[in-house]
Length: 159
Image 1: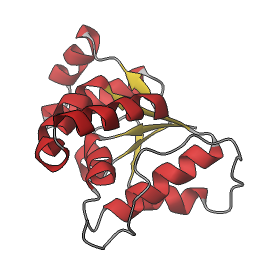
Image 2: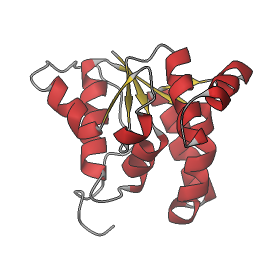
Image 3: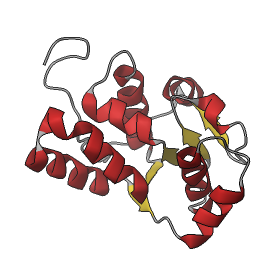
Image 4: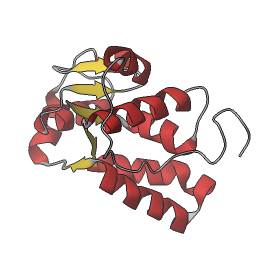
């Protein structure tokens, strides 16, 4: 399965933002172990950098983003995607760009914390928790990639 990650899910995952981080971490871990292809819009990287720079600092954040590039497929955003987004019925332009980027890279599902924002999407949109429910019971692969955000302390504790 090809799983497109909305920016908010990746920020939750990297920032360990509660109460959302646990579901994001569980979903990304499960998809990696199953061998699903995770993907994300190239546009998301600038937003993630902007939001997380104070938390991680420039160099550490660049390392995390580089690690993310090895964990997932980065989907290009081009003029055709922009035109589709501009002409769409979305009230949020960034969500429209995400939707049409996911569609262009042939994703099976968009994983987002804000499913209602994708009501105009031709693709299925699910929360990380919903994806985990759908994938329960599947066998793990032994050769799954190393995750970039394996917490040093359990989620919920102060870092």
